[in-house]
Amino acid sequence: MREAQASLPKLCRSGRRFVISNRNRPVVVALPVDDFEALMETLDVLGDPAAMKAVQSARAGKTKYRSLNLADENFGL
Image 1 (cartoon, rainbow, N blue to C red):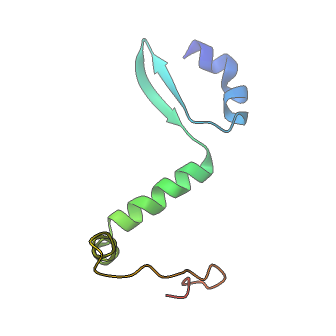
Image 2: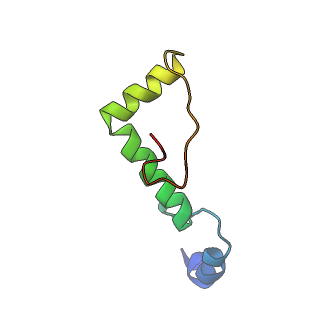
């Protein structure tokens, strides 16, 4: 932790994920905001039964993948 205190600004500017340890035990994980937002979106999908059913159906080959319209709020779905 002592090293992290001295280097925290530099670590944060690096744009990389890092772990801060105290006596060789991880105590904090820091990650860029984009990584955090992607993680939260993934958790939202994993927590949505309808979305997971669609993912499982696609993985099983029961449904076809469709192109997404990124300009549309609902991606054209």
